[in-house]
Image (cartoon, rainbow, N blue to C red):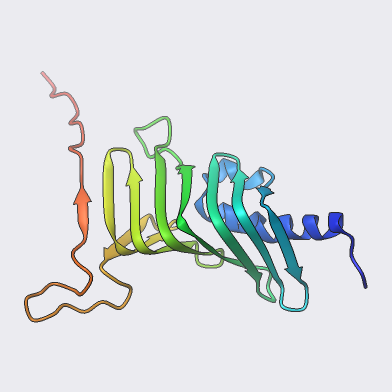
Length: 186
C-alpha cells in the first residue's frame, strides 16, 4: 500500500510520541509531539523512522535538538530512539519533589543519546553532561533511569579501572550544590 507524505508524517510523529515521554514530566505525556527536520524517511517494514538535519522534537516542556534522530518501534509498540549531534541536547522540566512546588529543569548533552521507552532509561555517550538545578555531572557515559530517579556516570559504559584506579578516557566530574537546610525550631 502506497502512503502519502501526510500519512508518513503522522506515522513518524506517532512513533516518537512515547519516546518523548521518557524525559518529560508526567503532565507532558498527554501533550502532542511536534517534530521539525530537514528530511524524514520511514521504513514501515523495519518499523523505523529517520529524521535528519537540525531535528527539533518538542513535547510539552521537553525539547530535543539533534542532527539526526532514528526511532524504532518493537512489536509491542515500545519506541527506542537514537539521537546524534555535535552535541545532541535535551531539556525538560521534572516533576516537583516535595517540599518543592515546581519541578527543576534537567539539561543533558552528548554526541549520542539512546532513549528506551520500555525501560524509561536514557543513555548518553561521549562527552556526556547532565545538569539539574545547580548540580552537574560529566563523563563519557551517563545513564539516567527516569522511573527510579537513579543515575550513574562513568568514563565509558564498560570502562574498567587501570592499575592506578583511573579508567581509560579520564575521570568523571560532579558539582553538587549545598541544599538549603530547614530553619531551626526555637
